[in-house]
Amino acid sequence: MPQLIRFLLPLVACLVFSVWAQPDYRTVQLQQFNTLQPFTLASLGQNKPTYLKFWASWCKPCMEQMPHFEKLYQDYGDKVNFVAVNININEKRQEISKVQQGFQLTMPIYLDQQGQLALALGLAGTPYSVLLNAKGEKLYSTHESDSVLDGFISRLAQGQQLPTETAGSDLSAAEQQQLLAKVQSGEQLLFFTATWCDWYLAESRPEMAKQCKDAQAGLNQLAALLPEKNWGGVVNHLWTDDKALAEFNTLYQMKVPFQIDNYGLLFQHFNVRTIPVLLKIKEGKKVAEISDFSNPQQIVKQLQ
Image (cartoon, rainbow, N blue to C red; front, side, top):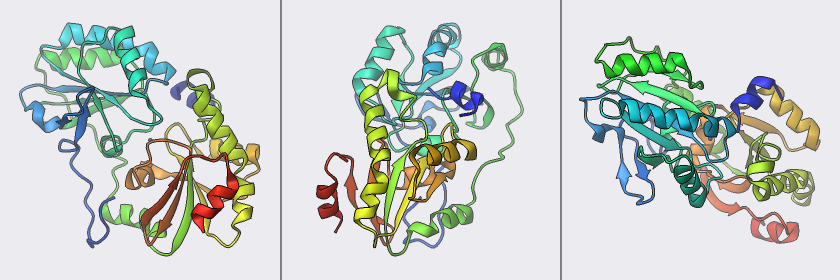
């Protein structure tokens, strides 16, 4: 696993329409923690710039940045909107509460329940900070929590106008449809996981890590029990590159073909928020979901 990835690590519309448009991130619905009341960035109004921080309770660099995050809120919270966004992947509400209480976080926390905001803003790994001007336009994004970020926030708090960030990774509707085309016909069994969930979560979430390891280790055997099925594997794009996937395939001697979920589109489309999970897809729709891999024979019965 590349050192950069280890450091950063600690993520479609209804196709009855012929044209799919990615939602404006300002109107993506989040949920307040703990009330679960709906919230959108548009509801913040246009009189202040906004600082969003994507994070997860099991992300070590996120935890390292939390004291600085809270200090920035104390310094600039009256002039800048602060939005702490939990990415809601393999997350537990009690763990979010522990982070909130442990670091005495006083800024509002929201849940990106379906990963739509992460998709819209190009999340590639946590921690991820995004600055928006008062119009909601993206100005700056970074994985760091450093003097550069401090400088941008200070200038925004003083009312300075900053140039918008050039969008380089936004997908067009046609590109999104093309990526999703392979799952829109026939029947498929898709196994969703991440190249890092077996080792990175071993300390912070040992039970989750074991589930990933066991399910991944048994996938070839499970697939052999249903050889007539169309099997495929999908790894989360967060903190993952081609080398990481190659190492993953070698480690588990995978016979099921895996792909990286570019831009998090499949995870968002099928609302995969917990891994590992096996989905049975028929004509583009999820018809079965399996997260307990302890009894292969029972899984076979469910899938036949």
